[in-house]
Image (cartoon, rainbow over all chains, first blue to last red; front, side, top):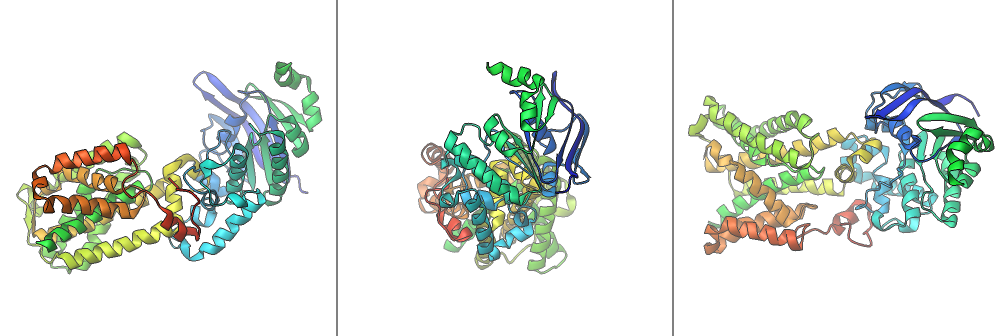
Length: 251
Length: 280
């Protein structure tokens, strides 16, 4: 596996009024890896994903994705470059069916209104492809139910399927296991392993350390808008600063 | 007599559809009277003053209306909800004042000389535009519109150019309204800016709300009921605004999605499956 960074972030800062969510973050994601991002609530993990994907406008710093600068690009430009994401507070299109949620993300249609207008001629191919993603995420039997009727775990898996349907090079998962029970989390780990085949790299925000250990190739810990540790899962989790900032709070 | 009623039913169906086209992406427009006026005056100028045949005049007028919509829409469509409604209401006033002051279009005195608008042409327009809207409703573009309406930020993150999609819906609505304006002008053969009063824009929105906002058949039902009912139940004619208001009020209380809110058929056509439950 080559080791060139697919995403590199330099000195990224973001503040809201007096609150500094990101204080000069440096971070890179290498092609082929799953990067785990941990840290206590309010550490700036979601702010980081939101800034990468253009939901927030960075105050200063640089983000490069496969050689392209992302700062100043709009949401849809970043989406089309190949960054997919899920949301901490699940944001599905609730009124659409599960299948439609996946189909709306298919790039041929999402990026080309004219092709989308004539797209009913290629309907069955598009449906087949979308069903493949639902099979990958073990949601095929729910294809025709409205997305708002899904359970918590299913909704989170559907968000991943929707993100995958756009063939992103980089997939950013924001607390995919939040609120899941143990069985659901095990299913999720299995599905993320499968999803890995389809993307170049992933970044994973998670509080579930079991999931972080079993999925991440490398872990970065954040606290108070800064990166405080980086390395393998066990290195980072044993790091004194991490223990103090994150695990220490629980005990 | 009945041909007149059916003609105005067609006009109102087109106008209700013009609102529907904008609402597909979540933009509620109270400017359809203005776009109707643009279509009416522009096509009238082309046919009555320049001697152009009706079909190319209609096409050109629709392009002009769509261009104005795109121009105004680019900044305005960043507004949401009540602010967009106010902006489109403002546009209705602007266009009326502009027309009143354009002497080459007759100014406040009115503009005349158009002819040839009749029921068959209106019916063809309804059929063609209805066909286009139906094709849209079974195409993946409808889903893109739905996504923009439901959560524009998430839609954008999926690679959808939200502003462009909103402009398409808004400009398409303006073009449809301008066709209605063309038919209206060439039927009346004399129009004045006050024919395109703001109450017209409001009525048109109510037609669509009454019929149902999330499919194209609702607009047909709403426009037909509200055009034909007062004509055939004469005592209602004087009470039209009251009945209208009461009907909308009752509807919003008991069927907030309109009379025809269920969309199983289009869903079936779109991906060959029926959702197990209502999509709404």
